[in-house]
Image (cartoon, rainbow, N blue to C red; front, side, top):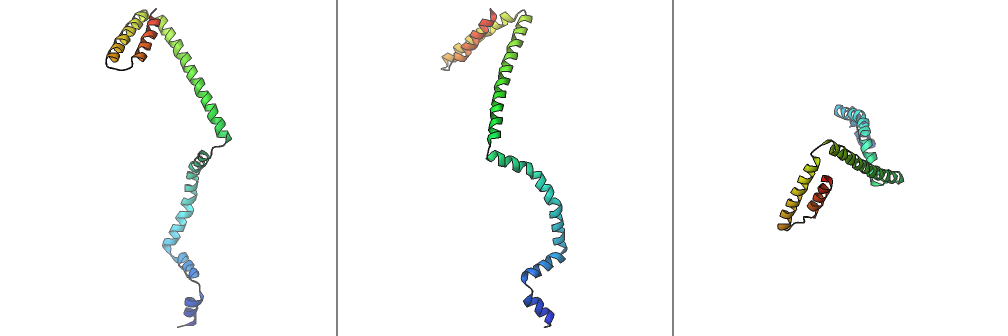
Length: 139
């Protein structure tokens, strides 16, 4: 055995031999290059999801305030929808000549349906409420 081979086998650490193989292997160079190129792209693309997950798991005061604001906005939106719906109903009632007759007919149909539901053992109250609503519109 030559002295260099003895030195290579005994004195050099196994990690150094692994490092030498690592730097001379074509496949390893390709893998390292791909990691260098793809790593930042994957990190940036996942950053938003990780941020959302972290804040969602530990909500802070700012998120609580946002949720309260959203609840208020939803209530205001619902109230606004009801008001607009009521205004549209009033406008359409004023424009249509036969709307009172249609409302009376709907009330009659709801009462008949409520009677059928009551005979079959169901709760006719919602149907009777609808009938009363349409009766009030027919007058």
